[in-house]
Each structure stands twice: as structure tokens, then as C-alpha cells.
Image (cartoon, rainbow over all chains, first blue to last red; front, side):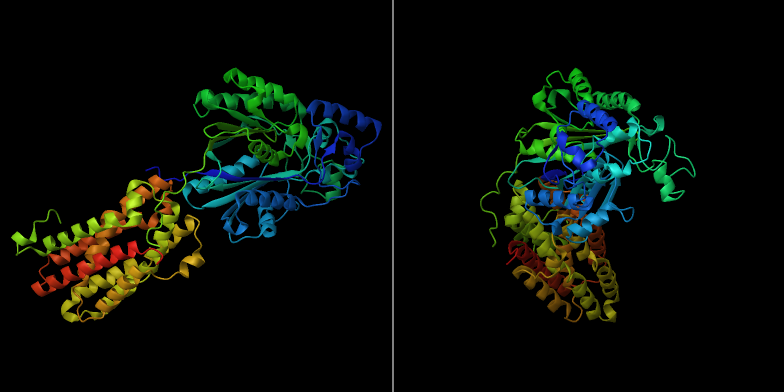
Amino acid sequence: MGGTATAYLTGFGRYLPGDPVDNDGIVARLGGDDPVTERIRRRILDQNGIRQRHYALDEHGEPTELNEELAVKALRAALDDRGIDASELRMLACATTMGDMLVPGFASMVHGRLGGGPMQLLSASGVCASSLAALDAAVSKIRLGDHPRAAVVGSELPSRSLRQRRYEGIRAGMDAHFLRWMLSDGAGAVVVEFQPHPDRPSLRVDWVRQVSLAHEHEVCMRAGMTGEEAAVGGTWQDGSIAEADAAGMFLLRQDVGMLDDLARAGIRQFEELVDIGLVDVRHLDHVVCHYSTNAFRDVAFEALRRRIPTLDTERWFSNLETRGNTGSASIFIALEEAWRSGRFSPGETVLLAVPESGRFSFAFAHLTVVAPPDPEPAGQGAST
Amino acid sequence: MTTTESTATAPADTLFERLAEVWAELEERLAQVPVLARLAEGTVTLDDYKRLLFNLRQQVVDGSPWISRAASSFDIDHFELRSAAIRHAEEEHRDYLMIERDYVAIGGSLDELRAGRKNLGSEALSGYMFHYADRPNPVGLLGAMFIIEGLGAQRAAGWAARFQEVLGLADNQVHFMTYHQQADSEHTGNLEAILTSGIIDDAGADEIVRCAQVVARLYALQLEELDR
């Protein structure tokens, strides 16, 4: 007897605030219309390939929603998709890079707004891969039989801190601009259960794997510190807020020079999954991959194709170009869209891949599409 | 309890042989119980398991109270039986909480479970047990224990394993049934010690067998009458 249950993804939801914003609509929301910024923005947009995205900002750049609201809307969409109510959840795992406030944890705020009954919470912080860390926690508890039903949400609202007022008078090099013109808002959610959906296909979670290589890499993506190393007295919490602000500590930065290393390390992690047999290249049908910018799309795609010669663009899914880079939300937003597109058939397998630049983390999940269970046999309920 | 001979040719059957016969009859009857038949053939549903837990809980919650009542009905000449009953009541009186955990772990509502009522079979079984426990020195209840603990020791773990296999349940969702394999094996061991200790006379043996017959029938009835 295995002793564990199986975890299935049975409901999918997403929420993208407002209308899509094309590349010409960015300035109205985030500002930065001086010629230098304009030039940088064009160059970065050319690189990352994002054509449209969503911001929880109105056309004047004023915030319209909280991050916790995006999360709740994605959760409600996933619950509706599954046809259940929040009161049926026993666990909620939330991933975000930054919640709306410092304290309490993001999941507490999401639960408070979502409602439902008593439930276990997890606030997974980090960056993009925190999405799959949250999924892993929920899947593990489902498999243990501790909970029958959980929900996982990845949610981001970086736009408000990417606006011009945060950059005025602060030295912001390429490290800050790169993310400023790349990140956008959104939330994606899944429902996890120990039984498949009764009358629709589900995604069985075969495994989730997350590994950090922070032991051999410096910080790549950061906020709240100066330089690349954390130092006593040198974090945003040590001096006055004004000093930290003036030092540019509140800008989200990425050391773009490390990104080629990141791509190489991510590919090695994938190779290892193949080598140890967690990914069977003869039976891998779909790949849903998160990457921050199209520059890495071809690198990742070619690397995977070296091991999976049959991988073609039909089996590769990303919606970066149309939904933007939504950090920890992106893998769920992509999975939701891929799922709804009807491209997955029962028996097929799906690999989710999420590299995180923060300090070199990599998360993967392997899913199998399962048909709904057979209808209940006749003669059911003989004693009723 | 091994093999059982035909009673017609062996009028002087021992108490164990007579109980074994009751047990064999119970096994035949259980095979006909719809939910257990579906379990055996692998067509059982999660809803079946949920209903089973729901129905069992309403009767199991009475288990310790009737054993306690029986303990208070034993006089000083039956001191050993009183001691055994007191110990047993203590061991059993949180068992229903295990069912509640399992029920919640498969998605059931604790409020609904606690607001539930006994089914027809459970009403009959529970009523009979309380009635019997009220009698002075209710020695016959050893027959009831033989059936109920025997089901726990010999059948429950098999049911649990089969539910896990068919429905993909985790260990954490079948506590009640798996726990009873160990706990009730101990209890049946204690029971055998009492039955062979010489404190049971012929009249007592007749009472034990009769009570076992009634409880076996009512227990099966409880499983047949799910939700009714």
C-alpha cells in the first residue's frame, strides 16, 4: 500500500487587471517619457518580445486594485471553474514577490478577503519559482491525506512601484530598467484535490521539484539592499526610509550580466531531470515554460530539443508576449491558457518549468492529463 | 477460532466453536451487504466510503457509553469483568474522533457529521446494547465484543486497504479502520483470555452465543441500512 493519495489539478483560473496595454500605452501608466528612458524602453521591449500586458493602474497611472484582490479574483475564477465554494478549501498557498504590505503574510490577507472556512495557509515568498513552491506544499498535503482540497495562487502587482515617481532622482541603470519594462500584473490559480474532477479531465501532479543554487551564486534580482551582498547595516531596514529610498534600495534590480549563467544552470537542471528519469523524453508531450524575456525562449527551446527531438513549437507553450511577465503568477496564467486552449489530451504529459533569477532557483512540475473517472456503476445506493 | 464442525454431529461444542459458527454466518451475510460487495468488486465510490464513515460514527459514539454501563452492571463477584469493561471503555471512548478525522480528511463536513442520526440498523444495535448492558452481570456482552472487536481485528484493515486501493486514499484518510486492526486484536486477545479463564459457566456461554448472534445480525443490518 502506497499510503499516500494522488493530487490532481481540477480547476484553473486567472485574473488580469484592466484592458491589455500595448507597448505604446506603457508610458501613460508608468511614465518615463524623456528621450533617454524612451530609448532604453524600446531596446528592452525589443529584446523581451512582450507585445501586451496588464497593469492594475488606470490610464493616468493610479492604482486600481490591491495585489490581494488580484489573487482573490484568480482564486474565485479557479473555484468557479471547478464548481466549488471557498468554504470547501482546507488549505490556501499563496505565492507573491511582494504583498501589498509588509506584515502580515500575504496569504492571511488573501484568505481574509476570499472568505471560506478555517484553513491552513502558506505565504511562499521569493520570486517566480515561489509559485511552484506553493504548489508543492499544497500537493504534498493533499498527497498526505491531510486535506481533501487546496487552492494555490501566484499573484503579482509590481506596476505601482515601476512608476516614474519611484525613479526620480535615483541612479537607475540597466539593472533597474530591465525589470521596469518587463514586469506587469496578474494572478493565476489552481484547485488541487485528492480525487480527479468528476466529469472533466484533470491534471495529475506526478511530482514537483525545486532546487536552489544560491550556495554557488550571488544575488541576481534584488530590492532592499545596496550592492550585491547583504551587509549588516546595509539593508533598507537599517537607516531611515528616506535614506534607503535615496540609495535606490526600493527599486527592483536585476544583474543582467548573470542571466546567461542562469539559463545555462536551468538547462543543466532540466538535463538532470532527464538523466535521473523524472522526465521521460519519449513521453513528454507538452512544455509550459516561464521565461522573463524572449531572448531566453530560443535558448531554452533549443536545449530541450536536444533531449526531445520531437519537441516542436506546437508542444511548447508560453503566453509571455500577450500576458507579460507576471513573475510568480506567470506559470499559472500560462497553464490556465494552455489548458483552456484544448491542446492537452488524456494520457499526455506536461512539464512546467520556472527558472528564478533571484538567487538561482529552478522549479519544475510534471503533470499527466487524466480523463474523468468512469461514471458510477448502476445499482448504486441499493439501500436507499 | 479455527474450523467449525457441524453442530448436528457435535452437540457438546465448546464456546469457541459455537462462536466460530456465528462468525462464519456473519461473514456470509457481510458478503451480501451492498457497500461491501461493491468494495470487493472494486466499484465502490468515494461517496460510499463517506456514507459508511458517516453511518458508523453515529453508532461508534455510543460504544464507550454502553461498555461503561455494562461495567457498572457487574457486581463484585464479576470483578474481573468489571475491570476489563472499565479498561475497554476508556480505550474506546475517543474512537469516534478518528472517524471524524477521516471524514473531514476526505472532504466531509464535521458539522453535518455531528448532526447526523443513526440509521435503522444502528438504532437497533445501539438500543440492544444499552438494554443488555442494563441487565445485572451482562456476561452475554462478551459475545457482542467477540463480534464487534472481531470485525475490527479481522476485517477493518482489509476494508481500509481495499478502499485505499480503489479510491486512492492516503493513510491519513483511513485511520479508523486501520487503527482497529491493532487495537481490536489486543481486545480480542483479552477476550479470549476471559473466555478460557473458567469464569464462564454453561448458562453464561449460552448467553454469550445468543448475544453474538443478535449483534452479528444487527451489525450487518447497520451496514445494510446506510442512510436510512
